[in-house]
Structures are given as structure tokens and as C-alpha cells.
Image (cartoon, rainbow, N blue to C red; front, side):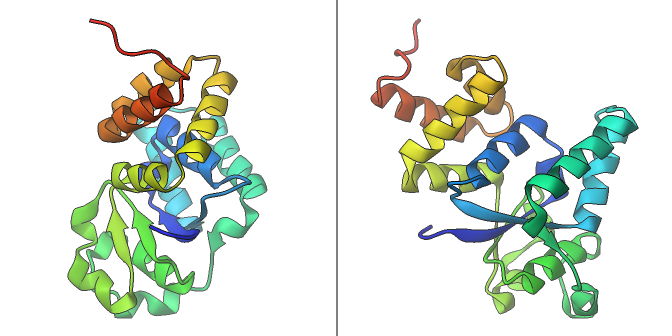
Amino acid sequence: MTGRSVVVIDACVLANFSLCDTLLRIAEHPSLFDPKWSDEIMDETVRTLESKLKWPRALAEHFRSELRASFSDAWVREFHSLLPAMTNDEKDRHVLAAAVRSRTSLIVTFNLRHFRSEHLLPWGIRALHPQTFLVELLRDDPGAVIAKLRLQASDRKRTLEDLLQVLKQAVPDFAISARKAAQDAGLIGPLEG
């Protein structure tokens, strides 16, 4: 991946709070990519936070309003006319339509089976697992990614090592690669044992 990409982030990724926090920090100035989502993606995120993760409604809505305030340019609109042209899984056609509308090159999702290449190639879009996306970002600019991770750890009152252990649950290869990059930079010591 070269240059700054425009990336649609699917609800399944936004609802994973630690992972979402990492991605959005990397998207903050100085950003390595421009995030995009739609009201439909955000509605699905909020439903997941409330129903599956048992967030109180007020907290889930606060999350939505914070994203609206912090990433006002991320909201994709006026893509519904594209829905009939989408051929991917019916449940996620709105995600692909938002990606096409925003001239995105990439959809980041855990749900790759709903975004098969034969449905994306005509639009010049690819879908990546968040782990693959983060590993590419780390490879392209390790210093910037590690700096963002250090800030995230500090803001969450964690060590970098602790944050990487949390991220290892959702994106283990990225956590391992980031740990090695941090170790190579002398920011953390070697694993013991």
C-alpha cells in the first residue's frame, strides 16, 4: 500500500473498541488513511455495541456523536441509488455502495465472505481483514504506527506491551509485528520465557 488510502471501515471493525481506537488514531492527523462510513454502517455499529456488547444506549450514542465530531468528513451520503448495481452479499451491499460513492480503494472488514473479489474488482475496490490492513500500514510507516500505539497506550493508562496484548485478541499477527517493531526501536524489551 502506498500513499494515503480512502478506506471504508465496516461495522464489525468499528464495534471492536480497542481495534477501532487503534485504527482511528492512525487516521487522526498526521493520518495514514482517510476513514469512511455511512449512517447505515454506524447504525449497525451502535446496534452491535448495545445488543452484543451490552453497552448502555447513552454510551453507544456518545460514541456515534464523538465520531461525528472528530471525523466529520468520514460520513458517506447519497449512495442509495448505487445499491441495485451491487452484487455482493445483500446484507452488505450498502457498505460496497458507500465505498463506490466515496471512491474508496479499500473496505476493512472481518466479514470478507460478503466482499468477494468478483464483486469488488469491477469497482476497483478490495476488501482486507483489519489485521492485513494494519500490517500493511506498519510496514509502510512503522515509526508513525508505533507512535500512535504508544499514545493510545498512554491515554488508556496501559503500557505498550499491555495494549499489544489486548490487540492480539483481534489482530494477532499485527500485534506480533508491532511488538517486534517496538522492540527493534528499543521501546520494549524482548519477551521473557
